[in-house]
Every structure is written in C-alpha cells, then in structure tokens.
Length: 415
Image (tube, rainbow, N blue to C red; front, top):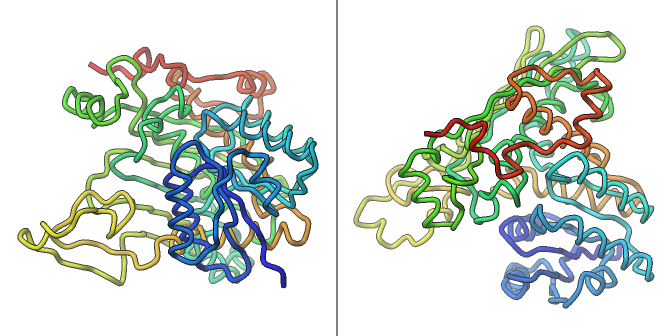
C-alpha cells in the first residue's frame, strides 16, 4: 500500500502533538509543513521520531501540492486566510484527497460557515478534529455497554469536564484572537463528547437534535489582581482591558427525533486547575448502567523529592499542562493515544483513502460552533437559548459574544 502523505499548516503545540500521534500509524507520513514560525523545529522533530522527512515549504500552495491531505493546525484568527489559500491551490491544480481542521471550526457561526463553504467549493472530503470523541476509553465504554443500550435504552445524561491551569500560547488568552476564553477553547471538546455519548449506537453523530442551551461563565483565578498581573507579564494579554472567562459550565438538551425523548449533556471547563495537569472527567448514565473516565487515574506514578527536582527542566514531561516537577506525579505513558489523537488521525487517513468524509465532518464542526456560541449568548443574556426558535438561530448566525469583541469587562463583573 502506498503511504499516505500528510502536510501540516501550522507548527505550534498541537502540531507537535499530532506529529507524535503519527507514530501510531503504519501507513502515513508527515511530508511537509508550512508555518510562519516553528516549521524548522517541527521538521527536525518529525525526522527525530521517524514519522516523515517533513520538508519545510515556503507557501501553503507548495505544501498542498506535496500532500495527499493537509491538516490546518494554524491559530483560530488566521483560519479564513489559510482556507482561502488552500482553495486557491486546489483551483490551480493541487489534488487533495482531504482537508483536516483542528477544533474549533470557527470563532463564530459565520466564520465556521465560511470555512465549510470554502471546503464545499473544493469538493474535498473533510475531517473535523475533535480528539476526545476518538478516545479509546470513550469508544470502548460505548462498545462494552452496547447490549445494555439495546436492552434498556440509550444513555440519558452525559457529563464532561476538561480543566488545566491555562493555555501555552499568548494568543489563546486573547479573546479577540482566540474567539473567547475557556468556553471557546475547551467547551467545544466537552459539548461534542456529551453529544456523542448520548447518541444511540449506530446513529450519525448529528442524529440527536439540539433544542436548548444554558450556560454560566466567570473570570475567577485570572481575574484577581495577582492573576491579571501575572498574565500580563507572562503573555502580554491585559485582562484589565480585555478579559475572557476562565470558567464555564452549562447544559445542552437534545431531542431524539425517533422517540421524542430529551437527553442532557452537562459541561464544565476551567483554566484554574492547578493540580497534576490536564484532567478529563467524563461519565454517562443510562437506565441501570454507567461508565466513568478520569484521565488522571494512570497506571504509572512517579515520585520526585525536592532535591532531585532540581534536575527536571520541564513539568510537561509528566503530563500535558503539568504545573509541578516534584512530589507524587501522575504520568501518562502515551498521552497522544490516551486523548484520541492517534485514532482521529487513523480515521481521517482511512476515510480519505476511501474518498469519503471522516467520522466528524465540517458540517458537524459548524454545529459545535453554534452550540458554543449559544452557550456564550446564554451566559451573556442570562437565559436559556431555545435552538428550536428560528429567530434565535438566525441571531446566532451573526452573533459575536461581548467577550470575543474585547468587551468582556461589560459582562464578567471583575472588580
């Protein structure tokens, strides 16, 4: 079988994580990268771990011409221009078998729709990258509970949380570039996982119909004077002037179109979890059965004393977003596989080989963006958003939250 050629657009943190995940695929190589910064480092890393020669290209058109599929891992605020460049390359003759876009598809519904329209104009299969749905713990839990679902009925309540101490890059903290705060950054993960877990076995990921969203957001840890000063010094982002939320929680209600039953997905996200590092909590409750997932329950633990800790330079050698290098550390032996990156890459490559969309499409990514924006609207207006109302859906099509506009001080109530 001819090896599948992947090209990356963007060379930041997620690109390195995805390159690491490629070690788990036997039939794909990272053949090239285009990025204004970090391309040389990613190329060197790719060669070091043996996932491809990864040529550094000078344009998006060049990496498209060299690849079977391109993965857009560039920052949120440049997605439109990146996709326009990909579309231009296809018009000039680049023969792409697929396009990947890392979550979120867009910062607003309008942006996500624009990216979807550009992809459609290229007549190219798509893969919306939402790694948590591909986690083996999720997939295996649902498979194990298949007989219970068929006998007792599907899961009725899903709960998902993702928390850590905050993003790596300054632009993630800037609501005008990122599209908001933790709800935009990580709420899309939790909402998507909840929707997926509630979906009856064998049904399309968009089978359940979203009917209502309620949410609340706050600026807690990073809203204190100490937090804002530390953030300004570290990233240059001023939460005195343009704050974003570091905590979000809410509920999405879905309707089963075949039975009329309503089911619910609860989500919680924060940038204020200062324990071991990134923590994912997920559970699903059905009639007479349940599953629970906690990614910090690792089979491997390491202890490092104060004196020995001086030898450790990087806390993230233990766990993504780790904030400590001493004491009892939870260590995950294979984070790229644990979080679903390997499986989502495998799904995209296999789907594109067969000339079809991946499990999660850009249409799906558009709907996740709509649900996230409905959550912002709910928190901003202090009401439950009725997604069955045509006027409300129309309003969401052009909605940009106050936080994303840089006007978060008007709604976050920070002293």
